Image (spheres, one colour):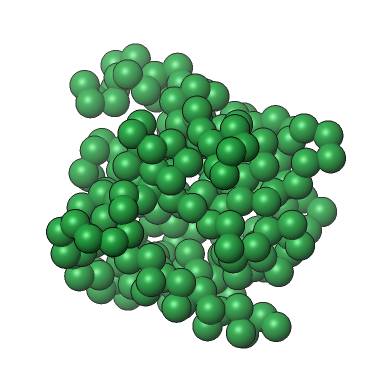
Length: 218
């Protein structure tokens, strides 16, 4: 889930991962306007929670998150409302602490694989919170944050794995400062504070899909 100020647990050992859930969704080819960092043909719910990256800083890291609102529930308007600052004070009890938060991610992949974009990829979204990657702090400055609708222990869907792989392949092709070697979970950049996308996220499976998509864009 997003940082609170505006991952994965160990990839080895631990309990067996849940099997991927099958959800049928036709994955459409993704296209991006490199000048704006906006995707074409996807749902846009543009967030006010972003600002410019520091001068001279380009995206160098992709951070994968997991989110569900209310916790453990999928669908509904609450992720959009969180990222646009529209969680009311009288929201369901499990969401009231989110009212007034100024947070966002660049994009969300829903359970059916559909992508929603909130912030242009060239801009700084407020997703990482207190974070560090390979000795470098303030990961929002140099990262792109992608949320998967899910929980640490609920199997992500085949459509999500495929959409995420397609999106990351497009990002790698668009931004030469990005690399497939610099992709992390939220828990990797905020260990002890965050656990998403959790042990349910099958990194080897997803990286195999990413490699296939990368072959397709070369």
